[in-house]
Amino acid sequence: MILDETAQKIKEDLPKFINGDYDKDLTPDQVQYAIKLSFFYNYVTTINGSVIFNYNGQTLKVTGLENIPSEFLHEQIFSTITNEDVFKESLKSFLREHKLNNLGI
Image 1 (cartoon, one colour):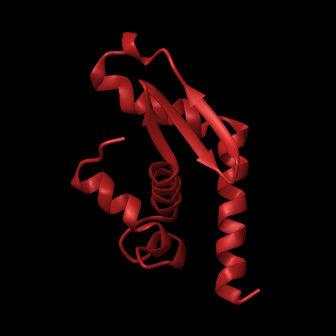
Image 2 (cartoon, one colour):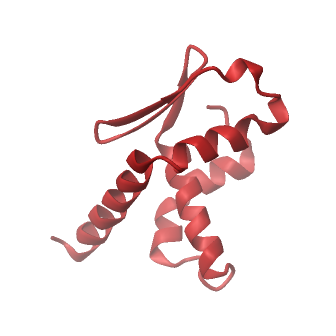
Image 3 (cartoon, helix red, strand yellow):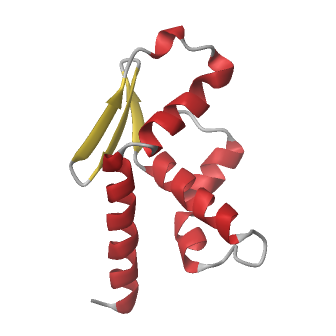
């Protein structure tokens, strides 16, 4: 997935969002949304016209995107993937692992 400059920054700043570096600048809801968006950007790829989310072997594939107007495409893909239980559980697992790693466990 090709990201613009802002999306690339969000992708790269996942650890900063989790570690509270943006807590002074964003509301708690905005931080949670940024974490979800950054996690999405870090674990999604496009292959042969399909968008694939993959984290630790948990995979979601979104196809049939050619009929969606381009101005709605990103929102549709993000909404479809992030509303799935696989994504939600993967994000929980990632956050748990990140916390444990920071504690040295």
